[in-house]
Figure 1 (tube, rainbow, N blue to C red):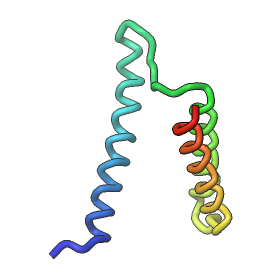
Figure 2: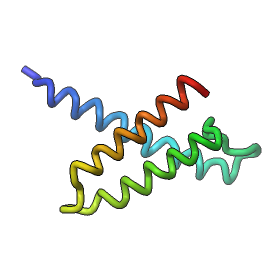
Figure 3: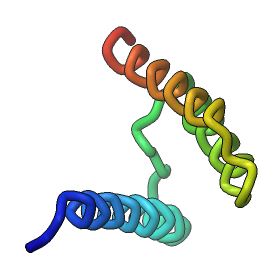
Figure 4: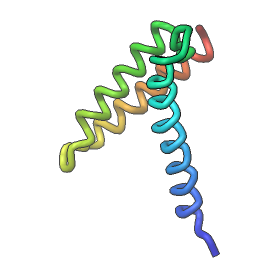
Length: 87
């Protein structure tokens, strides 16, 4: 029988693969295709995405992740949700 953690790991891996493969593929394809590349993000969302990437890069080094980094991710998530619900 498949456990809950296995199901969550499969779902997380599938989501990461979809995001990690789709966006770069479209970005490369936009070089040869006519028209601009639009991710559907406004200026505020782009800043939050950039901050998330920077925080991810800084905390991805083994041994550097701390509980405060998790709190920072929660603050970024709250900011994203706030911007999404109340534009």
